[in-house]
Picture 1 (tube, rainbow, N blue to C red):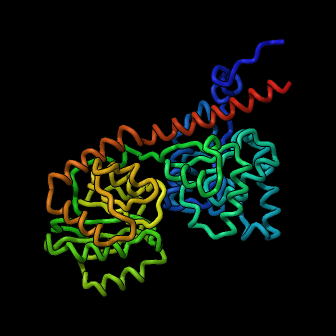
Picture 2 (cartoon, one colour):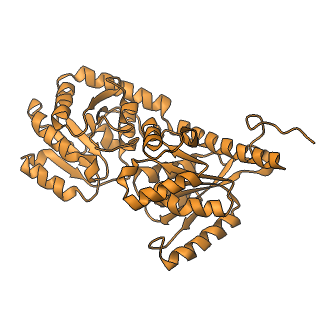
Length: 395
């Protein structure tokens, strides 16, 4: 009997030229402008095609990310059903099974809630490697979804998280073994997000200082804190502007709060846009004020663009900013502490520039899209190696 190589030595099917590239199915709820959609799309576009053939499955195949995938020739499967309990879900499951068999899918990686649909089916279809991703705090989901995701944890070969804070969250709150969790930090596209001279758009022209945030306008983003803090410090730089970029259910409430605080034209709301880098370069101080956050793409992109950043001490934000290393941290939910940190940065331009330079260097050297894709590819190859090794050993 021939000796069996250990997984660390055996050639991965993803690297074995004769076998060809491995079919990889990435599953995401939708393909709009959100951070997860961006992560999945960039992974599909950037992964080494000599090792992997990427495919995507989604509930909502429309939006700018879909156009990117379509243009690049990445097949997209539309899973069209209103709920898991609907008759259409059975048809979608059959469609999914046919797609997996047709493309000989070897790896399924489902991101956040769509894993409730994709992971059990992939396991039933005996896909060799089945992964789920938890890229946000699980408490943001309703109790039923949290329970479903706990089952998904057990059915997955591994749960991929994007920061150490989420690893701790899953191990302590949901009893997921640390050995069952893989860490893959988000990556930033450094060809798009990089420091460059700021060219203020017309609506910011002449502003001596811009404090800003870019995010989906949801309650957990804590943007009212930012408005309150801005109201406390705006007198330090007459004419300073607060820029809030994004769409979401909180827009009306935030507009009313701006009026209540008397911010007037100094609080500017801009709808979500596909190309956010030029806007980020127009922001002097970028604020992430979330009550709950994993590893913020918007914060990472702001750092990569050379913004000075301040963030709430939650989730993966301290991992990104560090303790007074690449920006400042404030206590979650404390608008006075946030105002104090903003005041320090406003009064000390040299400190702002130092933090901004460090943040840009850190993003470029440690959190590029190349690093992200390389790490994801390593996880896929290693887990597939282990499955092949165990399968051969069992014979």
